[in-house]
Length: 623
Image 1 (spheres, rainbow, N blue to C red):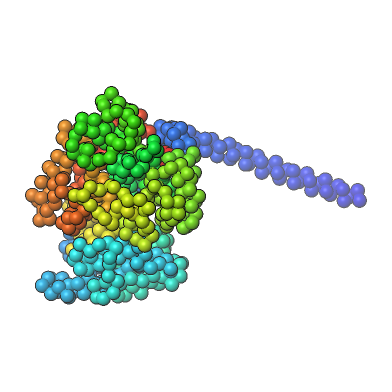
Image 2 (image 1 turned 180 degrees about the vertical axis):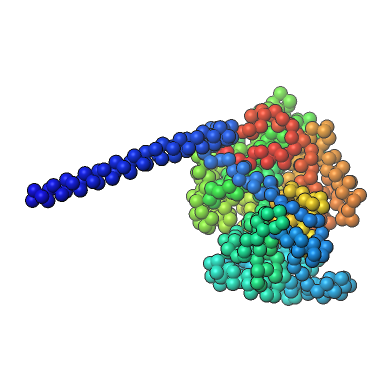
């Protein structure tokens, strides 16, 4: 027994010695790691001090600096280009890198014979395919996939006038579409392989394609030593266009990321105008006109969208509403005609001495539920947002904006169940035209007789912030058919803001190239709001628009209308050229400057800048 005890003691001493040795080794390492971590944190805090400090103070949320992540989509790392147009195979072989259009769309004779329209359309149809992003996807989903599909149908028919939600899904002028049989990379890749045997251009809808695409191909190196990935076998015989996802430096893929914050910004302005035009409904009995904003999951793309809505509301309250109030005080007939019931909804006299009080009374409020995390349902599953919607309605919300995919149904149903005087703004596609639409119990007085839209006036969903995927799809097809690397830009580099780029590049789909927009039913309202925006050049917005319109019409065969007629709901010409109107608006917002005052945003103090630059610097959700 004594020997056994001595052995135990001996073993304990050995174990203790080992432990001490390990601690002596780990202790210096721990000190080094601790110092490194503290140094990193100190540097990070210093580098982001202003943004993070203000974000924490206003929003009570530590990870609000989503701007730097989003800007990865605008600060492109473009590979060197030989020339804008790829001329011959020798040039392709010489520059063999992740941006050359080294595939043949189809029979050149069919493309040249423009008089044979049926062959022309047949060639387009047979060379394109759409692959959905899950095994249970359907192309006519009244949402993102349907918008893409319809853009392909429009391209096949060479027709821009078809309503985005009235597409044909059979016959030779349709587009071929398919989906994986199971949701795994292997089955996705199997679909790509099969489709690439028959089709030259494969359109991929949704971010679920990112993982299977990233695992295909081999890494190569160009003449400059830069690495890129290239597909082979059947995969390599096609061009792939990925929408709402990002894969860079791949010879076969064009990625499209959407500046959803810009379309949300326009929608925020339009939402405010809709409320002000209906102040008799939304402001009755002293009720505040207020908007509830919520998201599904707290990720950067959702946060910047919500921030875009807030910046639209902010611009309206600070730069548009004061001009409207002043014009009504001065009995301006045009303004009174734009907002005919505004004077009926306040106890204050409409005089200049009360201007500030009137502005405060009619400013559009954003409903805060406390911490920023309280504005998220935690998923994108229909039904999970009912509690949030009820919270907003309990606080008398006049409008609700769900940045949460199918949870827009939760908002529509709950408003209908409660017969609430509240409307909904759609996201990504023209939700006001879909099956989830219901009719409000009251008649909306938003549009005067000269711009009447019977469909819109009684909808719960008024209009939507668009990812204009159909427009981008048509542009992608045109680039590929012409064998171009990009639209616009110089011979050696695309314009990172305006260009739509082909395979090997990432497209920043934004308001300047028509990739971000507001749905047609919202165009009237955003234009009505911007009408009262005064740029710092001494001209009104409508005068700025008319000058830009005149310059455009001088250079283009597609004529667009001056301001007074540019938002007429009943004008087929406006609808036909709607994407062009959106691009023109983007160019104006990117060129003309206004003054932003101190404390107006969380990091701008007394400066004059363009609206798009201001928006780029302030993509924060701070409710």
